Length: 104
Image (cartoon, rainbow, N blue to C red; front, side, top):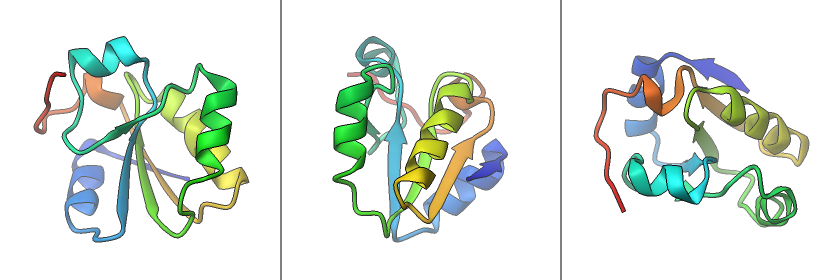
């Protein structure tokens, strides 16, 4: 897992053709505001999270975010443990995000 600043994470994500954008917050948080083109998977739903993570294409580069950066750091560690080679945690999470967002 690499911890990236907001600017580095955004630039790297925009230039990565093998990127997978993962939001690990709750459904409610995701509906309030999320980064466009992200896939939402609630890390608090542990069994569903693990089942889904194990089905992911592990060759992708995973850009992971949450509200403040703590849950996404946990998610990156889990992804690393199941064989994902490249995980990038967004420092400060969506609270510090200055890029584009959407609501559901």
